[in-house]
Length: 410
View 1 (cartoon, one colour):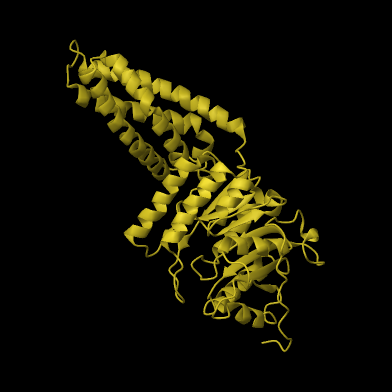
View 2 (cartoon, one colour):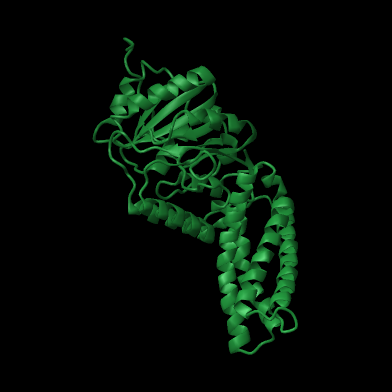
């Protein structure tokens, strides 16, 4: 340990939750740095030394003297802020903020960004559940992106020891998010991630108003995010301290989405490629209608095979699904598929696509039987109407889950 005394605590910004346009305009006279990483903490005295040691070891090799670590502590009863402050002589890149009048992970991250000097800003949990070694992959991804997210839901990602209930809640929250705010949640595979980097210029000058723990939603919803990259990581169980995951977090997540939806300034995706994809998706869907109709005729018409209507419809729909997938994978989302090459990834896309469409087929069968058997409509008119009524389901969920319509870097 150095003989020098610990550095002073950082002053807490009292202005709106808005990141300055440039590092030079932040509350420091020092030169800007390449990277600032915020570590929000609460009762992490047992973990803080270890994570600082690991981060410093990695960053000293990757970008020596070009980074800073900022611990923002919410006045922890175990005095995490004091433990971190005493380590500043050992880690010259470390700065510490103690918040006594504000609470909350999201606002802690923004307060840290407000005093940061980096051109790239980041956040990582202080409990070692986010593996520090993934940070180097995120920094590499930022060379061609505005936002780089560590994701549990892409290749290389996962969770270590989550219970089935927690897995269900996490995935369920994501699906609800897609329904509430698809233009934000659909941009990344893991919108509840708390481990990411963002370019300062993409969020600077924008007043933020987060709710709960999910600061990534605020960045996606209010920032000028164009290029997005994702890196897979395995979420680790904490070794020290207690988990802070509660039902309240999931509720805050949904309330945050509703808040962005109703009153926030949601930044829309650039529409150039979206419109092209929509038109292609529509044309592919139209081809699927003809395939579906032709197969239904061959299988169910009294002059051909004369099979039962339900069985014929299921088989006709599945052939149409295969047709649609092949065209969408090759044409509509070809630029994304080309970056996810290999038969395993293609099979995974098809299974996701098929699973969503199978639910649509089930609804389609119910509607067809209702319209044909109960209301007495012509079988082909009834089939066309059933297809139209389930199109919204197939379009939105396949758009957001089977292929993410973003410029995601591998």
